[in-house]
Image (cartoon, rainbow, N blue to C red; front, side, top):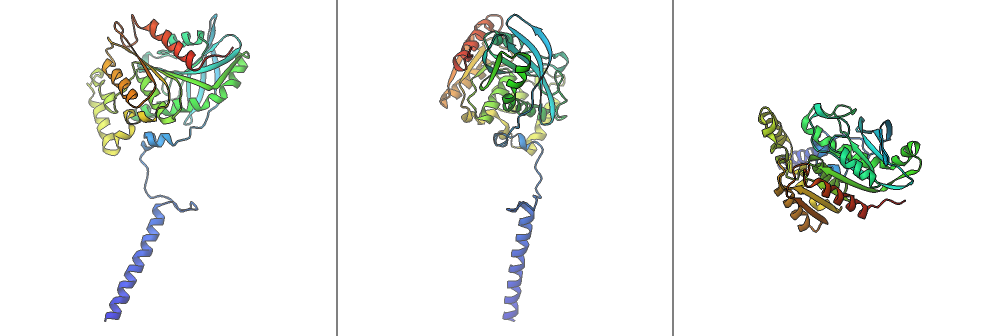
Length: 341
């Protein structure tokens, strides 16, 4: 009887061991890659900052479209590129005159889709920067301008702005060839790149700096810099339903995902770039306290940051801040990535 029990126990242990091996192999990739995971990834996990940090953004071809304006100092064109298989349009400014020009990516804030046309939110600063000797590219983002439609899920549309901007940055290596076709004396330098972002575009810019880990000199005007999802829930009073639909959407997201993995405030340590920060003290969209706290947080982490405030200035730094802010921004870029003529 004892022998029988011993044999039975041995059989059970051995069988359990081999069953464990079998199911373990079914659940995890083998060294030769022949088995597949039974655990399906949630659709938006790929947008978590840690995942995006490890993502390689493949460069896209850049094409230049219609000439929009021909000024004394620069020309403005439509441009196009691809991100995640979708077309994105934008506004390209090319200075006149021969030389090696640095490149600025301009990232606008929120604009109602019905009122949007290419260049809204970036065209005025883009003109100043072009006259100062910078090539500028301002992407429209999915769903705007002549771009393809974004995801039907609003939060994914938000996250797609990060991947669109990061793909554009990785694609700048292709810019010299296409610019050479329309303006041969102008030579873009993809190794010298800066970023300008306003409002929600500042939030995108901060996210790009964190995810990329690159030292792109960056200027932020009244950036949205609070933790996600508070950074979007703050604005629910502007909606017709006072944010009911958005709160439901965020609630569902929080059930399925760790929101801390999608909040830029948790990854400020990753920033390596010098930052210049501008804030109007009469701003009704982004409270001045947000930018002050961002400045303090960055300085506490030994990041290089300049902070300027403007007493009689609103969200667009009007009426008494815009001129000083754009002059300081231009000088910041000239100091960090000067044109070479």
